[in-house]
Image (cartoon, rainbow, N blue to C red):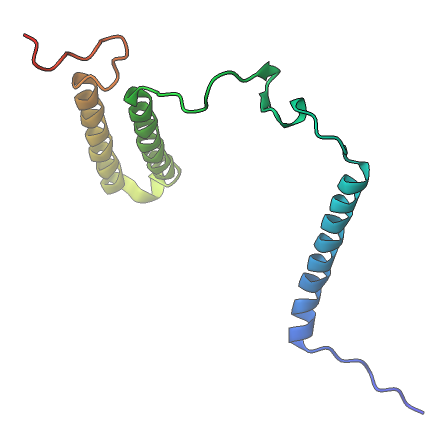
Length: 137
């Protein structure tokens, strides 16, 4: 009696590890939920449902108004952070780009500097100055 060798198709060999991983993840997830249900608290006190952060009980509402200046600074940070990514990529490939790449980055850095000077002159970075009232002279 001869036994035929077991052959696997490429499709089966590619899908099997994914299937094992998915089943393992589901087993771990189910075990975590079951242990949480078995070992978790069963009471509903008023203090249990209160928001608590960093050892301080919260007071007041969550809708606090912030100055638009904070959002402006956040946008400026994101813009200049992305530009630093471009400068870093240029620095890594600096020798391969040669003089044309160097001149392009000088133009790019010049535009960045001009934008920063414009924002500085327009008062986007001044936090201490109070905005002028409209209609008063």
